[in-house]
Image: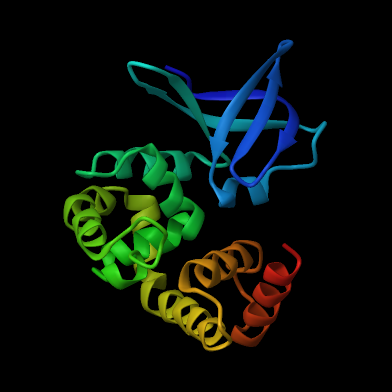
Amino acid sequence: MYAYFRGRLVSCLPEEAVLEVAGIAYRFLVSAGTARQLPEPGTETILYTHLSVREDALQLYGFATEEEKQLFRLLLLTSGVGPKLALAVLSGMAVSEVHEAILANVPERLFGITGVGRKTAARIILELRDKILKLAPVGSAVASATSQRGGFREDAVNALMTLGFARPVANQAVGGVLELEPDASLEDVIKSALAAMHNR
């Protein structure tokens, strides 16, 4: 129904953003990745939009990129995955990393996310792999980076876990750093992730 909303960002929290469009304030549920990419309040921005319609509620979901919105909608096609869980997946991993996990058939990268168990992770990969492969522009870039970046991320997450952090927390912190600094070294990623977690 809606492709995107363009307006002034009123506020942004880790899980929601408010956008004022033509004098009307709209509340969007957003992933942690989108929240990190949004500008300062008062700035004009765009949120790509998905409207969830239920018997008892209408809920807008906002995304910083069309690719994130596309993956969110694909996740909703998976048996047992609703909007809340789909958003949790996007908060736990970057879009390219979810693609990597699906294409490489590595459910272990998914079931560390809050709410995603082994069966759900396996189901996501089983039901979405063919659909992800059809996304040629994203799929080709992801396929070339799968082994290199996937192992890199896992090394960083494991290092943080040895320091006592839970996997979901470490996973989210590392994902945030890699989104902002995709070419950073392993050491720099770990340092930045630690700093981000301590500043929460």
